[in-house]
Length: 329
Ligand code: NDP
Image (cartoon, rainbow, N blue to C red; front, side, top):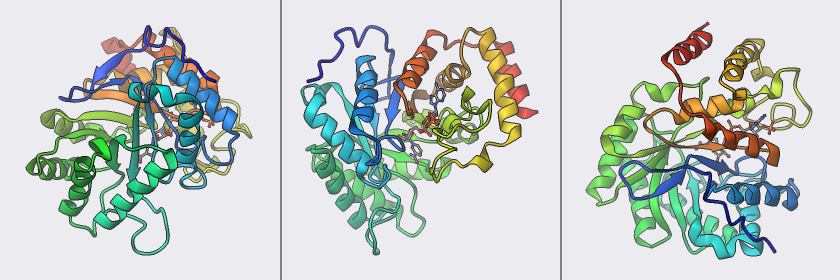
């Protein structure tokens, strides 16, 4: 039986999510790819427990995480049951609906029918009465936004989630969706965009909207799925994401240009006394609007290394312009 480290709140830093009262750990753990049905339960358990022991209170899931889809929530449900149940009130658990989940016209996108059925399925897989945050995972161009927002508001009123969020909505879509929720008396807690040194789209308007609206931001893939680490400095390891069967990162996307930039960034990181992974996380966390970053991991050692990013979140103006120069080359 697992007993959490009693010092778990000593080193983690927490930040309020937008204008809400909810504090999130600066580093959160996502269960997208390495916690599915093909991974031994003990491996997932070690990572989740190591994260919780270090003060990571927030675990990010979605209906389709695995593979296969749904199995990451099943894994998390098992861990809750066997290890983490006594700590439920110390955890912020999120899930999402928006990508393909089951066949037919009601298993995808943003209808009320899909989103509410999906949330019920997620709760069942995790053995929970409610999640803390329920997200619409991506905007649906075919469904009126009012309907998707109404589904979020309904989930909230039913007590099946405590807060609602948006993911992958662009700046204009976010402005609109936050406005619709407001009319329904619902505050949008959080937005979950992809954001890293290699993908800076949020800087072109989204972060401004989030600031104006008091919505927090939690960045996903802050390490560009591993490209902003030393993982690919000497080729593509067989046990890496790009070396495996992941649909989101294959060997072709590990380009010599990206690896070259990562190596230059690594030199700067070393001068700051950090690894590249730590500097990449610190760079996203340093932005005023960023509440938290969601890291992925395949090993406990990665989580431990990444946590030490919190030891140096400050950048000099020279360092920031050097990073821009390397990225722009
Ligand atoms: P990251 O950018 O943090 O990439 C994680 C991967 O990077 C790990 O699996 C590992 O790769 C590698 N890695 C991590 N730390 C280190 C380290 N210290 N040294 C070397 N390699 C390292 O994030 P993800 O892309 O995994 O996304 C994180 C989370 O964000 C997801 O789990 C999910 O919760 C969320 N997300 C949300 C999306 C959305 O649409 N809302 C979409 C995608 C993700 P390896 O496996 O090769 O060891």
